[in-house]
Amino acid sequence: MINEQLISQLVIIDIQDKLVDVMPKNDIKKVIDASSILIQASKILEVPCLYTEQYPKGLGPTVKKLKSLLPNTAIEKKVFSCLDDSKFKSALIKSRPQIILCGLETHICILQTALALKTFGKDVFVVEDATFSRSIAHHQNAIARLRSEGIVITNTESVIFEWLRAAEGDHFKMISKLIKE
Picture 1 (cartoon, rainbow, N blue to C red):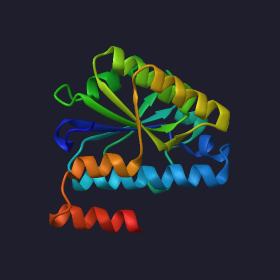
Picture 2 (cartoon, one colour):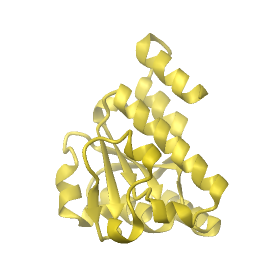
Picture 3 (cartoon, rainbow, N blue to C red):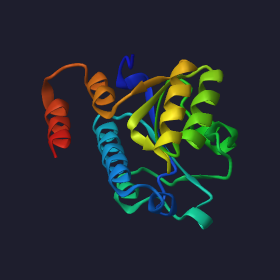
Picture 4 (cartoon, rainbow, N blue to C red):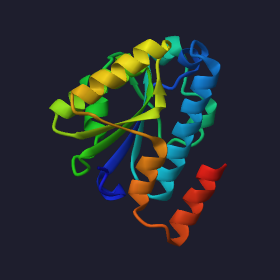
């Protein structure tokens, strides 16, 4: 269970133009929309957010809809597990043991990053409605494998409302508006 926003970090993995272009259109739109909501909620609740780009020279930048919401610059990588990249590893906040993952592709970078983070001692949560693969079968297989390895599979609204913890205050009003849109 995600205890609170004070111990979480959000990681957006490789939601880049050329990867998005090869995904089923309806499915990838849902992933981008869910990721957008997660990013905006993380800003409101002051949950740190990192994002990566896999070989941006070849796969392009992070999609515009998300890039405009994201902090700083992307962590560029050529490895599948983000944890194998020294810049990523050093950007993780040690005092925040819960890592919330979303992005592309579930069966490659999400899977390898989640398993490595778990081995590294982090509590890992994969947001199923904010992840995808070119093939639905690969996505489903990766979700099943992650679950069998003890990774928590969750969804956008569960993460956000666990961060919130109560249906009151300005944060709740702002986030309720985000979700209704």
